[in-house]
Length: 389
Image (cartoon, one colour):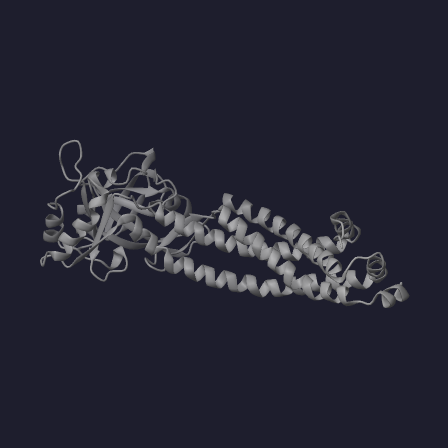
């Protein structure tokens, strides 16, 4: 026997539009939480992955999980610069940058509370290794001076880092001469200055990392084997893009677990609400159900009709929740990266996969919330339905 027309199903939602809106609103809230958690996790990943270049190689001390935990001696850095296959600049100099990386405390603009900011010592060749970084205000720092430039996110999120201001750390006053934009990568949350001046100011005798560019990215395995096989180097080489992707894993995983746990808890309430709504619909339409059965519609047609109604309700909630979550793409937020203990600015990122997962989550709530009432409607006896009408 034919199924119940979709127009009939949609009409019932419209007739009970107040209940429909309230139930769909509850589902929309859950979908909003679910989608924003995934968008936050994806935003962190995309920010850190964008920090790396596919043909750059990052070298750290073996066992160091982050730049601030690593140490590379000057002699080791010099040996790395002699490796074969390293790209050169226009003057024939190898594109190698040995960099110290440290943390300092700065007050946040929003609440005045201190938070960690990454300070990176770099050089002219270090800038060439990061083509996505460009000065948008002021100028680049001069080598050999106590001048620094600040990233866009650092300038927006922290107090006392305005262009022309003097920032004191490591027992020295540093002049802010420029502001750079790193194309929404992790470098946006840093402060850059001259590498040698940073080493002197922080009284450090070793670099944190060495970054270099390969002339042929396909030679990474051979380059890594050379580093592993040299007894003078107790270092580990990784593609830069992979290193920064690994930096996002701990924080992204924590956000996923916490956020999805909340979404599941909220979804229980939304499912109960949908179930109550559908039970009310069954109770108010007992006569209609009996009429449908008397007209020849089978039990599975009635079951399908109420399931379709529940899924339509869930779809409305899913679309509303996803629309609200998509607006979060205009928001920039920051949090502490568990790997570096430094502030990381990022934005919410909505991908087609997240949109699909959010709608699937909404439909699952519709199935769970609608099945028992639909089963109840399908099991009603014709005589009992017509008598109740």
